[in-house]
Image 1: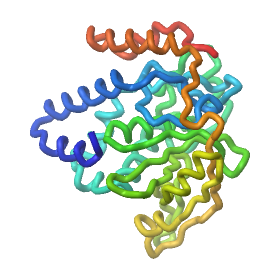
Image 2: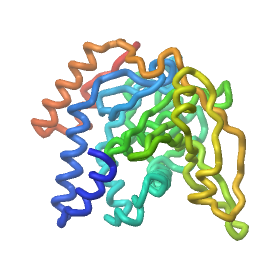
Image 3: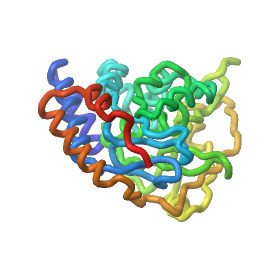
Image 4: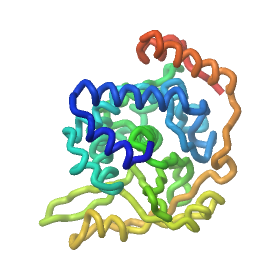
Length: 298
């Protein structure tokens, strides 16, 4: 299902019950058809699929921040509630949709990454961390925010990709690249780093998006740098106003880019089977997460 098809289907649903049933079926379809993988910093350079509730997202190869579960299945309904059903206004096109998602994840996680020790404390008990445990605490960093964005985009039908690499050469970083429907370009979207601009002396923020050619995307895949370009942000959001144009240079982990790390592959396959069976039997994702008893370890 493409983004255009998603919008047209959703707009044609007449009742709340029809929309809720559509959202539930859409999410369950994504869960049951996704390929199980371990993903994260220094585990995989990129991931193009939907991150299922039984998969772990690692944001640090040392093990300090691992096994965050994208298990909050309410966010897809919450996103559609957030736009008040007005698809034409909040999802007119890809850039407007991205800005809507930016504000949605701010509402979910908070506006910044907070204090790193608070985040470490959350991950310190040796059990999987539910994304719900980061809600409203201002401690979610790039990997958690980008993981949620990836899932929201896949839910909406985007051709999107979660990428793990570096920002400005030395900072481990996660971000998203997606391909607009019918276009021969790609868009880099960094949920952790919005663009600041000034309107009548007041600071405002918009999604950090940058146009990328196919040649630049191929270079990124091969480990080359991509320099953030502010032209798209200026055209869509900033317009005649002034914005902050800090230098941003993105790279990917070219060694593992798009490669499936086979760690615990058999266990992931088993977890997928159990999760699908649980859905069929009406068991909630909270029960499934609790039953993991400490989660997967490398």
